[in-house]
Image 1 (tube, rainbow, N blue to C red):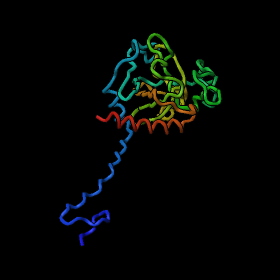
Image 2 (image 1 turned 30 degrees about the vertical axis):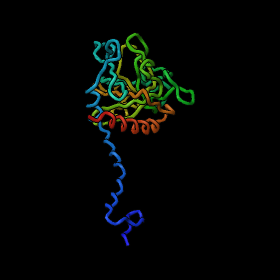
Image 3 (image 1 turned 60 degrees about the vertical axis):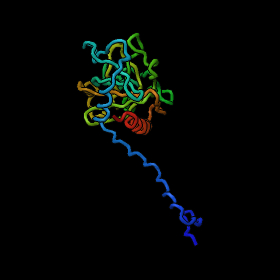
Image 4 (image 1 turned 135 degrees about the vertical axis):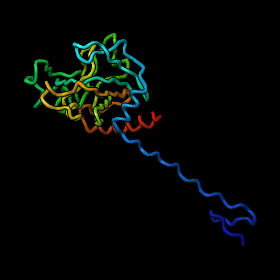
Length: 228
């Protein structure tokens, strides 16, 4: 009697053995999300989308380009000044400085201004001939990633600022990067990489946990798609 084939059907005498079953494709290992990995990718690709450069501070000369990078991203590197605007909290309120405003360009899902104390958000320049956020797909809740030193933190676009200045984020965003302190002294003059993903909206905009979840998933995909 002919021996049975691996499928259980008797094999014909002299027939070649059945080929082994194909192994399922290996699942790619996720790439580690590191500050160095994000900085290196941003450094390799900058197609300037701003019609001119931005200032780091009002008294500085324009020097910062706003770039379109790989993977559909936007990015710039600047300092981090504190935006304490929005719904008043223990740190950011009318007593925190003369420039406090109780509003933000975008509100939370409850219709109230965002809280700079609670919501890690990034400030983008207001619309102008230099750059229009909406033309680049940027709006309230757009996923933002902040990179400083060895830290990678997730945020949202939450407010607009002067049309010619770039490099500002909420007190909560600064705190997440280890740049807290009194509002007037928080932040840093050292470089921070700001990375935006216009194809990803965080909902609700005021939920830091939602930003972290969306950020980790989108950045993991970004690293896979832009592997050298």
